[in-house]
Length: 437
Ligand code: SF4
Image (cartoon, rainbow, N blue to C red; front, side, top):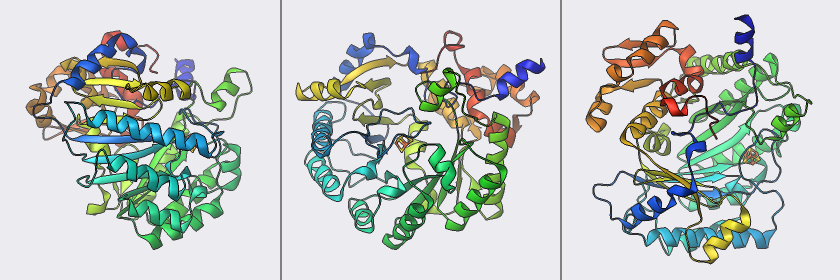
């Protein structure tokens, strides 16, 4: 028993973070005709729509990163890619299911969107706008790496309509940034943050990671204090995991184990940050986020996705969800560009969801908010989520991870900090104990 507990506590190689359902390992090329079919069908009463633009370039590869990113592309490569991205948006704009619909949210993700120069960024937006404008978007998010920023670039990012700037700080300690392969150092964070405030964005988010290699109690506490001193509109904290294709994971598999903190230790560090920010007037918004209570702290992208919005994901390896089907783009540079050159959508694998899978997907994603509103599920799916998943709720309550209050299921703090580890309990039996990605 004790050994089993120890094993669960250790940070093993494999995915812990649950971002979608059913697991990616169940998606396949055999389902691609269903994507084509649904995109050709006009939508009646469609959900909100979002656009994700993947900018897959980084100055350096972080040792914990598992995303499809490139650190070796020159200006011509970047231009070729941005041209393909524009043409992919144009292909979508013309499809019956999407034609005439407005984006409610836009997300520039990476990689590092701020890797682009002002000229590249303005050129990209100008070309995309010829096909599909996003003037109606309630939120436009842009991810930044501090060391790529200058004040004129931040001004250009603001001028294209970005409402929410997300700064990938991860940590303030230079030794830890170095050990984990980050491209920036703390001086670049401070410099960039002054410019961010001078330019003035409606919402500024800071990302931190708990449990980076080299972390100690004192260093984490110092990082939390510095983040709090910045007074961001929101703070996002991830717990370091070791997904299969990260550098740290390869080192671990070959016996050169990096020292990664245990899950209880990481949860204790996130809890410390929660307590410090709560004392500073912030509120818990999900298992990963704290927000300053104000209208500037909304998360349109997150909330729309977790409530079943459509999202067109563009760029190499991007993920989409449209018309009840999950799908992913080709994840190799040349294959992605060749598909776009041929005038076709660059699709790789897909999975149409059953009604029950759509329900489970929203249930587990919304559980990350720390509470489940049963009336929402009754109205949308005609399902009583209390009764349908009673065994799971009872077990969570008995273990101290959940409690029921006036018809609403709440996770306790302990449950919220380990929420991703609780979600597989709601998976259908065929997806229990399968590789997630
Ligand atoms: S900056 Fe982000 S996307 Fe780029 S390598 Fe680091 S973690 Fe990965």
